Amino acid sequence: MHENEKKALSNVRFEHANECLTAAQSLLDSSNYKSAANRSYYAIFHAMRAVLAFDGIDMKHHSGIISEFRRLYIKTGIFDAKLSQIISILFDIRTESDYDDFFIISKQEVEEQIENAKYFLKEIERFLLTK
Image 1 (cartoon, rainbow, N blue to C red):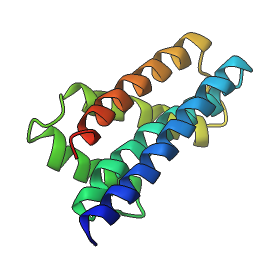
Image 2: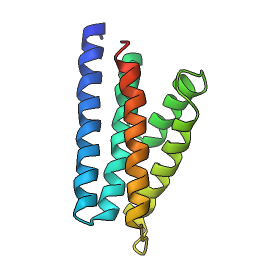
Image 3: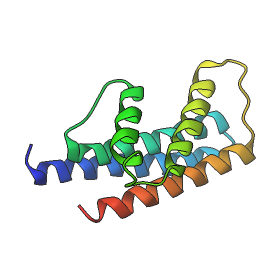
């Protein structure tokens, strides 16, 4: 894949990340907390995929995307370890909200996770602007 194709793919993935973040906020505003938590996670998931596009990496399993992002970009110091913590928290909440029938998440918790996702996307955007 040529560099301009990688850039285009990254842009599409990052746009999807922003759409998910916007959806998370809308869902929060309409008191759909589990769905808002889900969209917050997917915002950072697609942001990671946007970065990994430059390495020609995409995988079907979320764990593979997370692992490669951490290996290539967090462990190397390109991104702060805080992003790794955000990934863990949002992944766990998304998993619980999707699969645990009795999972309850508060408005405050969702607001916090949306803020984490916003921070994550800002850090990714700063990186992507250098590409």
